[in-house]
Image 1 (cartoon, rainbow, N blue to C red):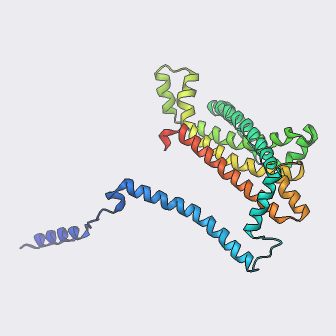
Image 2 (cartoon, rainbow, N blue to C red):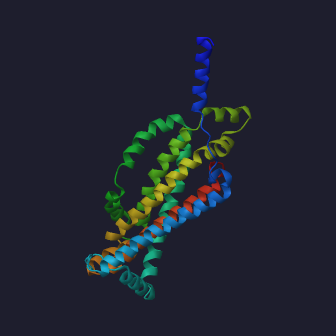
Length: 286
């Protein structure tokens, strides 16, 4: 055997040794069953972790490790929650906060989407307004609450406008970026098909920009909950923020935790609703 042949055989053997046989796993053998079990595991963990933390809290509070004046046992918080529901204070607080959040959120996001589509579609307008929008976005919205109170008083208008302004700039910036990022080739296809400006906006620009716009709307929902709580601390006589602040003044930590947990739950539910809306409106993005 010639040296060249031996080298070729050695190279072939070395190449053959690099191959590995991969046995199919559960995900390949039973993809639907694997996905179902995986989903059950993930949902179980999502429920188990907070339940375990609450159980640990209860154990530590019962053993005296946690100071009850600051961290009352979850059982006491649940009993206080039931009392607030029985006397109607809890329902009044939740409805007051929800009304302000939903009203301000819809006002801010819908106007931002409409304006963002226009600004993002016209390059000259986008270039002219982007610096101003960025500057206004960085202003802490709670910092303008005194101005809103001065102009509109202590009523609902000032708090709803505060939520609307908070949501407006987040959604506006995301919408402008999403519209500006739509490939020009899509617009060329629309023009070649004879589509009008409105048809192009409706059938090309809006669907392409929708995923990023909805992401901005999800972010804005969390900020809406945060900012309304801050506003209710200082300028409300009802609402979950007022419940937390008033409970602190009265030295009732159980009621404080009821308000804090309720605020968190509203944020979670709000986010889940928007994810459902995104799932319905963007089937191509699932």
